[in-house]
Length: 250
Image (cartoon, rainbow, N blue to C red):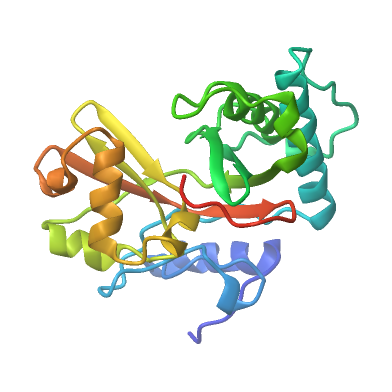
């Protein structure tokens, strides 16, 4: 059987029927959205061909991105002014799906706050509101954002896929499976946890340095990611931002 795109209900049901009659065994080779392969991030693979990630959700439409960015700015402004979060009505169904996200605040190209969720527990629009308010007030690395800073702030939203554990048998094997610029990395070292969003690869190109810095972010020595108590998961992020300079790190 030639490799073909399958679309529609009946061709798939027919194949399933033939599978039962003839005793075929199905194997998932690759999952793709119906979009250009050059921009498809559904199934990044290591050199051995093993998929490292679950399929990515359909990307947001430009109006939905703009809506979320406006919502994030309103959420930051309300947090800084110590007022109630923005009320939202008539949200499109896509934004009511539960999905994890991070909101990043920068000022003058420097990070000013970045907080979010790694797992989907809220509708996306609510997750953006909560993450934006927390990034403004509760990032422990920075003092709370002031009203006088609002005009200088730039906001970026990263909508995340579900993290997927990476199976590896050595530090070198792990390095071979990471895709710079594509993978967000979640590092567990014992009880400690830290993550870098995919955008951080733009500032830390080397895989070893990337993991060293991530281990330090978790409060461990740089080489702790090589230890037996370290585990790694990867995820993807759909990132979009207001006009402004690119921040340094998350």
